[in-house]
Each structure stands twice: as C-alpha cells, then as structure tokens.
Length: 114
Image (cartoon, rainbow, N blue to C red; front, side, top):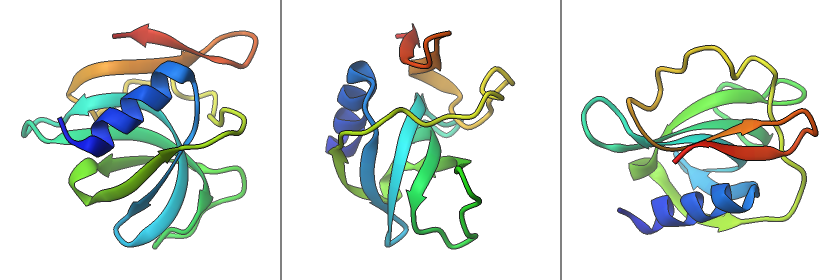
C-alpha cells in the first residue's frame, strides 16, 4: 500500500481527521471508508469539511470519493470528527473495504469493519 494509504489508515484507527493535497488542492477530510475501487486502485470515501474544491464546498462539508493516486502530503491532524448522518446509505466509492468507520451515539467514530 502507498504511504498515503498507510497514513489515512492510521488516522482512521485513531479517529482523527486528515489534511492532504488532492488534485493540487488542499483539503481537510474525515475518512469513512478505505480500500480499493472496482479496478483494484486505492480509494477512500471521505467527508470533506474544509479546504478547497473545484466544485465548491457547501457549508458544513460534503461527501467526496478520492482516488489515492491523486492524493499527496497526507497528515493526521487534530480536531473534531466531521460527518453527515446519511452515511448509513450504501456507498459505492470503495468496492473492497479494508477499514470503515461509523459514528456512534456519542458522536465519536468507531471501527465498523476492519
């Protein structure tokens, strides 16, 4: 796995957000699912809550599917976990899930699948 993948996986296990550069733009995300897409490439389902976006970022954030081949400089950062309550819906971003986080009643992330 790539260094970006390893950093993101570690952040998920710690329940921490990640900062990274994706498609040349700085972003802050909470990664909810990590694994491989249907073509066997590293991919992540994220909730982007800060940073830049080519499409614009609505207030509060938005779900984003990112190909890790286009992500660089991933760093674990301090801060609260960000999400939206529609994560229960079936995601199609990550076909082979390695690690998945959900949010408990206390608002904190927990490992749903590893």
